[in-house]
Image (tube, rainbow, N blue to C red; front, top):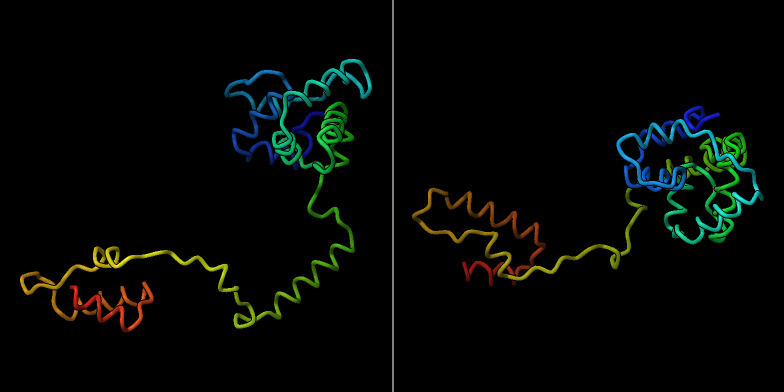
Length: 197
């Protein structure tokens, strides 16, 4: 069996970002590679050693030393396997699966693997989502981004009206009112701004 024989992994390898592919390639082949990285990864048929062999233990030790936890999680996400546990546990799980791709195929996290409990939960979530109305969903005010805007910013946005421009007074007022609404200005702010313009 090769990685390309597992449909979910074939799709992941084809669609994943190059930086993540490079990380997996370096783990599998011990070099950075080139433009053929994806095809070499697809053709990977597993490591030649078995779990708890001397080579297995050496590779595990090397992976633990050379790869960060983030890189290991990137690789496990790309291979669609569980990334829970300590760094050592992740290394051993990853290496065990890469020694026997049949075991990897059995342990891939698939979207429909969760069983009937998950299906019932999904159905409940869908029903509760359908019952929500727009009015019942409100964001807390402290989570809304409030940009800091000075009068100089607004003045640079609104051109002062002069009789010489080719713009009509109606158009200028319309643009001014749009800016007031956009910046959510109070009546006092409007008065001060009009005096400056």
